[in-house]
Length: 61
Image (cartoon, rainbow, N blue to C red; front, top):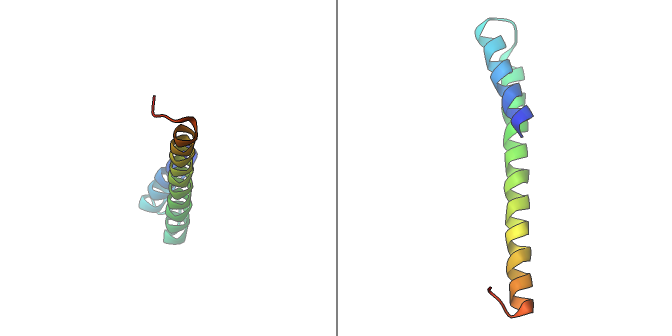
Protein backbone atom coordinates (compact mmCIF):
# COMPACT_ATOMS: atom_id res chain seq x y z
CA UNK A 1 0.00 0.00 0.00
CA UNK A 2 2.88 2.45 0.46
CA UNK A 3 3.52 2.21 -3.28
CA UNK A 4 -0.08 3.20 -4.00
CA UNK A 5 0.18 6.17 -1.65
CA UNK A 6 3.40 7.23 -3.36
CA UNK A 7 1.71 6.94 -6.75
CA UNK A 8 -0.99 9.33 -5.56
CA UNK A 9 1.62 11.75 -4.28
CA UNK A 10 3.55 11.70 -7.54
CA UNK A 11 0.41 12.03 -9.65
CA UNK A 12 -0.67 15.06 -7.61
CA UNK A 13 2.76 16.66 -7.97
CA UNK A 14 2.67 16.04 -11.71
CA UNK A 15 -0.79 17.54 -11.94
CA UNK A 16 0.24 20.61 -9.92
CA UNK A 17 3.21 21.12 -12.24
CA UNK A 18 1.09 20.69 -15.36
CA UNK A 19 2.82 17.44 -16.33
CA UNK A 20 -0.07 15.07 -15.76
CA UNK A 21 -3.80 15.09 -16.14
CA UNK A 22 -6.54 14.87 -13.58
CA UNK A 23 -7.38 11.38 -14.82
CA UNK A 24 -3.96 10.14 -13.65
CA UNK A 25 -4.59 11.59 -10.20
CA UNK A 26 -8.05 10.04 -9.99
CA UNK A 27 -6.78 6.64 -11.18
CA UNK A 28 -4.00 6.72 -8.58
CA UNK A 29 -6.51 7.66 -5.87
CA UNK A 30 -8.82 4.84 -6.96
CA UNK A 31 -5.97 2.32 -6.87
CA UNK A 32 -4.98 3.53 -3.40
CA UNK A 33 -8.57 3.25 -2.14
CA UNK A 34 -8.83 -0.28 -3.53
CA UNK A 35 -5.53 -1.28 -1.88
CA UNK A 36 -6.68 0.19 1.43
CA UNK A 37 -10.00 -1.64 1.21
CA UNK A 38 -8.22 -4.91 0.45
CA UNK A 39 -5.93 -4.38 3.43
CA UNK A 40 -8.87 -3.72 5.74
CA UNK A 41 -10.68 -6.81 4.41
CA UNK A 42 -7.58 -8.91 5.13
CA UNK A 43 -7.31 -7.50 8.65
CA UNK A 44 -10.98 -8.25 9.27
CA UNK A 45 -10.55 -11.80 7.98
CA UNK A 46 -7.56 -12.35 10.26
CA UNK A 47 -9.47 -11.04 13.29
CA UNK A 48 -12.45 -13.26 12.49
CA UNK A 49 -10.16 -16.28 12.10
CA UNK A 50 -8.48 -15.56 15.46
CA UNK A 51 -11.87 -15.24 17.16
CA UNK A 52 -13.05 -18.51 15.62
CA UNK A 53 -9.86 -20.25 16.73
CA UNK A 54 -10.28 -18.94 20.26
CA UNK A 55 -13.88 -20.15 20.36
CA UNK A 56 -12.87 -23.57 19.04
CA UNK A 57 -10.06 -23.86 21.56
CA UNK A 58 -12.17 -22.70 24.49
CA UNK A 59 -10.37 -19.34 24.75
CA UNK A 60 -9.78 -16.51 25.12
CA UNK A 61 -6.35 -16.84 26.65
